Image 1 (cartoon, rainbow, N blue to C red):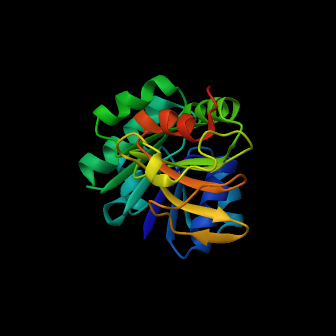
Image 2: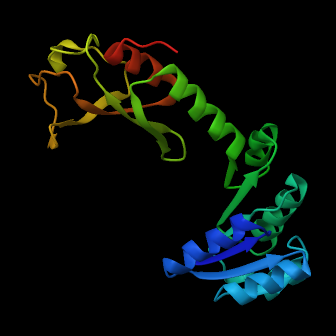
Length: 221
């Protein structure tokens, strides 16, 4: 896959290094001369110095043949312009923005950016979920946030302990996708009885996940 990164700093460097290790073809546009020079020395990638929202610079970086553009500058208005040039002028099928101000996330979606990611929103949500549900070891979104997957530990006294799955009424669009017990992975069925220390893989839509986790663990945020 051909990926164009626009921006500078550690995020661009580490992302580029990771993509190169996965055998993707990488190009970078860095606005600062020193940044461009440093990246070109450290990475086996095409690195250009210039304004990433300038169509001439994007053309030189190969945007017309690019599969995805990642706008990673410190300014949201610049990131939006970069993605609009990539999508509207060069027909790049996937444009991704790292949003600095979480309030811009929805605006970017409405303006045609394929994916707007707010690190602030993600960290805030994860912190709230960690505080609210101490039994959750891991939680992450899939399908562009349409589903959430959580790994839940059933602690002593949890309402689901010693209950058969068929006796637990989970909300619609939620399910237990797997059980890890004593190092073994179990495929859940209706008669399966849940036990203390079981680790449950819970899959649910964001709107109902809190209810599903409360039914299983008894914990409330």
